[in-house]
Length: 322
View 1 (cartoon, one colour):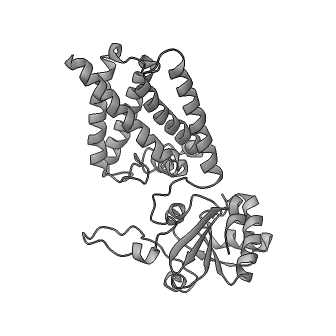
View 2 (cartoon, one colour):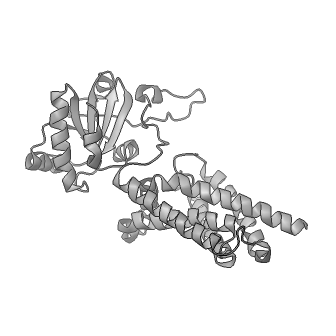
View 3 (tube, one colour):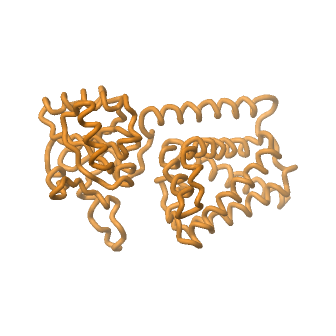
């Protein structure tokens, strides 16, 4: 009796944890892409040949994580599910141990941007998770389907279809839920204030520099500002240049202060500006900050006295209210 209770408790905890962890990344897979690019970089795992595949790798891992969480909860394909959970947990355990021991990738992104844990906290969390999964592995016979017949199979495939639809939607537009410090409604000057505990403020490394000064304080005080974000102009969608040109012309007529913001080299920016006849100047900002601001390249962030009021991928610029 005790064993059966332990198995069901472990099953519930593992399933809920995997579903939650997968969901907070599912709504923002670009964040996981950036995290895997960091893991694959020369300074971490030195697997640079995998960087171009970071996004599909992230999507597959996220969908697998949340789907396996659903499958263990409903008891579908218990043997396959439990051993797959074990493999994922070992992978997560290795990555978090590596991050903690070598002080690499100090935020593993295990819970996306929703919950921040230190590397060692995440490692210990994964040890507990592995123990729970091992309980399931050694007691698979006690994992029975919650529903009879084909219902577990139907739930699994419907869940997969929903998860893939969500991925396609957020990659085309923007994350369904924005957990970051640049979310709509956030005031950036307030986010720059140091917390009482002296930790790093949520908004840091936010500078909008021209060739002479940081214009961030000036722009954050203005009523109507449109920032056209292109963190890497060479990786920007070419269709986006046409879209932001049209949008910027309308924004300028509506009285907005419009700037492009990029971390690219001046020569690359000048080439694109001349090629597409872009009617705005560019400011420089750190690439990581720009990736955090908006999961689009290009994308637009609208500010009113430092408060983010609208954010759109270039495909949705017609929806911005000017």
